[in-house]
Length: 173
Image 1 (cartoon, rainbow, N blue to C red):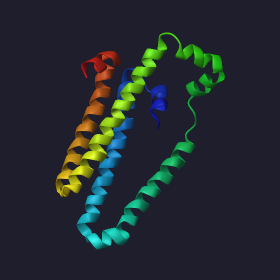
Image 2 (spheres, rainbow, N blue to C red):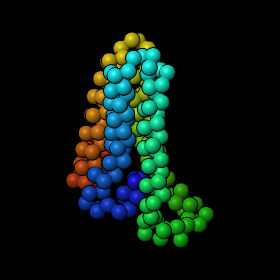
Image 3 (cartoon, rainbow, N blue to C red):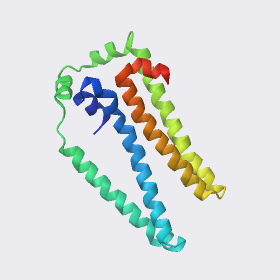
């Protein structure tokens, strides 16, 4: 379920919580994949893992991706989306980008960029650096703790935004 679909179908009083499940499910997926790799590293030798064991993990991910694509294509478009498509013209976009909406759009782009940098640094760069410094167990532990904190923070932030409002929650953070 993409986040825009969740916004369209969620009850107004729980919208933040519903939308928070999108990034938290990404973190949960990364966490589960790390646990699968940890499991296979425990039962296979390094040679087995490097020659054929990685293919098992890759195949498991492929199966999940196929199921995800199938499920997404089976979902109907929301009524709000279908209704909004009828009134979009090039002039609508020009009006949208002029005036008071442009600072809000730029702020959202800035937040998305900051999130991407944080994600890359914490979940990709840091574990890679720790592995190259021969701290493999530490790398897994840092990633595990960071993912758990991320899961709690995202869902908690969604709940806070439902309780106090989106603007106040952003200002608190």
